[in-house]
Image (cartoon, rainbow over all chains, first blue to last red; front, side):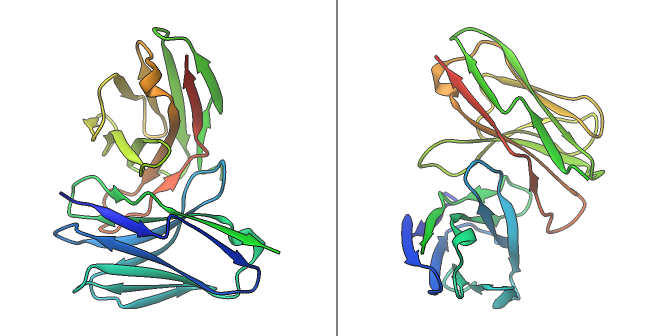
Length: 111
Length: 114
């Protein structure tokens, strides 16, 4: 069964610190992996997409990595800001089947 | 550019009542989707429309119907609401012909069924 597992479930960090969120997937065949940010009470917004051939991609303070061999991805947030407080959702696409969503990691950045 | 808009934002229904959730997008996307998000679960696809005039079931279609009114609008109908349909509903759109389409989500409708 296609699954996406994210860890940790929740995380609290101090403003200015770095953090890394993890995503493991069993989806096959693999097409791409996206990280979405979902602010409280809003819809998810795409941060970055990783295709099979990509190992690392950055979007400002967000850096995503992909290891297609171990089926793992990470999202690294540098110099966190209060506005980074949100849920971060890992989503994997497999061909034309419905997207497989992880349950998300709830990040709280505190002053 | 409003992106994806949804109405209403909040709704409370009694068991057995019906209602229609409205969704519209102004990005000229071919594909539109309805998802539900429940606590402790990932988003799950209810129905989708790959292009105007077509609709298909997703993972959890039971108890729902959809209408792709035109390229812009995609509505979700609950004919006889049940407490199990209490959820947050998100509409999304994307360019289906893109091999790696980005989904653009609306702000969501928070539905409670008593």
